[in-house]
Amino acid sequence: MRVFATRHPIWTAILAIVAVVLLWAIFAVWPEGLEDVIGRKKIFLNALFNGVTLGGLYFLVASGFTLIFGLMRNVNLAHGSLYLIGGYVGFYTADITGWWLLAFPVAFVIVGLIGVLMQIFVFRRMEGEDLRQTLVTIGISIVLADLMLWSFGGDFYNITPPQWLSGPLDTFFTTGYDRRGELIFLRYPSVRIVIFLAAVVVGLAMWLMLNRTRIGMLVRAGVDDRDMLSATGVRIQLVFACVFAFGAGLAGVAGVVGGTFQSVAPGEDTRFLLASLVVVIVGGMGSIPGAALGALLIGMAEQFGSVYFPTYAVVLTFLIMVVVLAFRPYGLLGRA
Picture 1 (cartoon, one colour):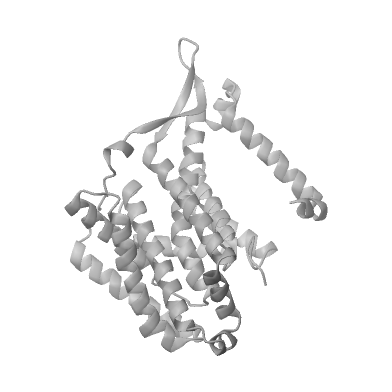
Picture 2: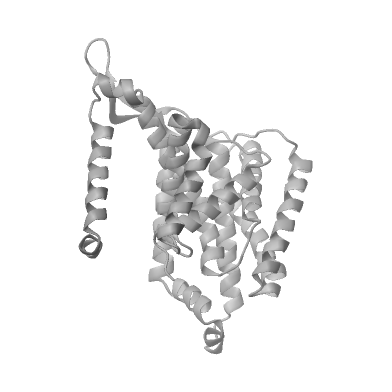
């Protein structure tokens, strides 16, 4: 941080001003004139927290994608299909057993096994052939989408959370005064808060695994020089299969999360594949902190865009990607 401030004093000053203004907007009681200009504070806070929690969901999807695409250099354009499969698996697991929490490990295992099969029969046979990987995984995604449409129909499925997560939670963020002059505090869905905290835990665990464990060292060494690593006796293909299974399993878990506070339906695979691509490009390929930062930016851009600029919400998302690529070709936290 100190190095960044020394090298970029103007950007540091701009970021500091933005941070101060944002903190004031979150914690202060807005004057009536400000609400006349940009709307009620409750709408602003809901858009902010919806953007943060949506960013958590995007991070769960994109973190698996950045492992497979950013670290292993495997172009898997069927990643969105893995997300949707996880959503359907989670829905039926929770519906049949009545255990919402059981849906997460079941989706992780089943989608992870699908990922292993893809790594063994597709990517292992096409190492270094990016174009073939792209075309084949596009075909796989189309086939999987048709199979899911045939199996589950075009209905929307919602995964019901347990009773202890169904209601709103009282927060300490004020939205204004009531008629008696007392402060009104924002109430926000408990399930969204828990899911965001889970995404933070997953992100920290992944960063520690890749940067502080022997497994992470093997993965990074295998990407940089797999021949040298194989010469030391490490079964590099087994390591890559495990990483691919973990990345695919995260997509399955994200499908359960998405089905809980949104829905599972045809077309969601394409939507989350595009979101993962944008997040990884903005954050930087192979960077877990970059994926978290990119997911947060894209999630908030979508929510604020849908509230304040509904006509240009999609344009705002891709505008961020264009601006980042213009000034940081390798992403915000990516390296050449």
